[in-house]
Image (cartoon, rainbow, N blue to C red; front, side, top):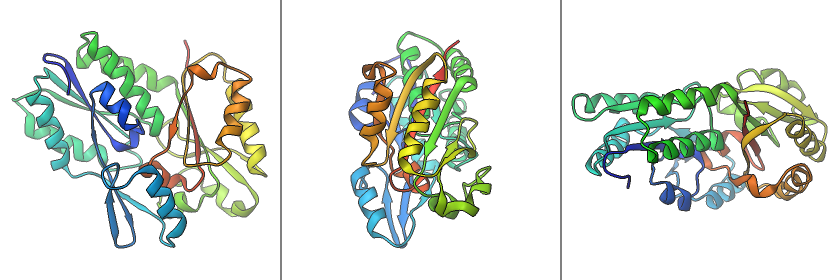
Length: 283
């Protein structure tokens, strides 16, 4: 973990970086908890992405998420300090959607006078958060300080876009994260909603009559977004994800696109078959 004298990066399991990339980057991921009724799981520890979506499909109870304890973040910060890091930067999912960042801030107070610990709101989720973590690690490896990294990430955040194509608003509604997409609820059965979480809160972005039209519409929005960087396309075991990749592949080199699965933390609110697109507008 980490390198002596470098900034060590900590994040949470909403980042949706897979295990191999977490190991390659050398970051510490603090997991949230997922509950199905009385059954509670620790994300990425005893609940894989596949197991989560299988459980959600068979369980009548919609999943609920719970932030990590401050103690879990304390353990992560302590391990970073023990590895010889000079500073610790913890980048978390949007504080408007979770109490995770509040827990990290509480934990950081325990290290005052010991090692500098900075807690940062990504104002993002899933691969939007993951992209910021990648950039933070890249800069840390180049010798940047926490101040340099947070300044760069704040600039990225002002240009970062996060879209979600949902099959249903039911999970988002029951989880209380509906935000500015509230107006969509009246026509739940007639539409396939697309939401915008670019500011860290949920807003309505678009609506289409069918799933196929929604995927084509999303492809069009990506094509018309202008010059972009760090494009990621993610999904929650969506059977039609390849259709999106085929369409987007007609517009750009798919080798430059990060792909992966939307994990349990975001999938619990996005619902089954969710598809996400995140990118940063180029300067």
